[in-house]
Image (cartoon, rainbow, N blue to C red; front, side, top):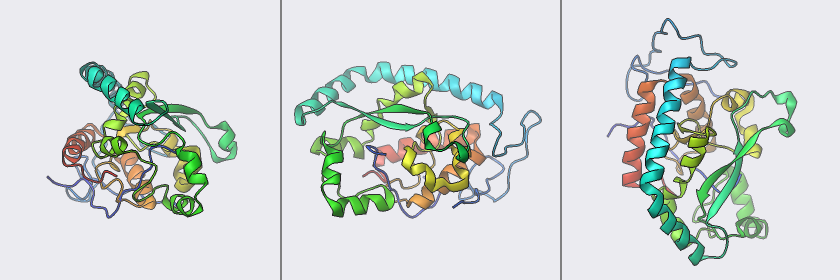
Length: 266
């Protein structure tokens, strides 16, 4: 199956918390890795996309309707399996079965407001690490140094046995459908980040915050754990500049393919 983006590496640690030019897209609304490098013509009702502008309202309206219907459907379908997994997580290691990661919410924000003015929300995940994961990291300077470099750890010793399975299958992110239903997230969008990570986006930070973070997106289908942080930033900006119904559909189907093949999972 064709790649949406040809990248080299993934990095991610779902449990914790420069500027790049956005890549051009094809006339069909896809990434240049799929087709010719030409930007699509603007529709009559579409306002120019700038650093202070949003996507066209028809796109946002349909996107929200799809989010609600899909979240309700999959939550109803997966309620019983999710309940069983929650019990298994709690039995494997002490601690809550749901992990709440404090991430940045969609908002209008400028750098002069500082981190104190940032709005956040709790993104839900099935717990995949030991309950004292932060303490383990702080007590090991070597691990902390590795983690601080790209916000990831290879062969992370804090991940439980069940947690590793949940991550490789992406099942740990299933509870985020609740965030989608609440309107805090969307099915497809830029990756969620914590407040300390915002500095990595430089002057693109305000644009990133104007868009809801996604359950999946270009980063997730472009290598995930094999993608460097700088490449993550570029992918997020590319998606924001290239949003369309067609691109969202391509990302969705590519996500299903990646999950089935466990591509790029940690």
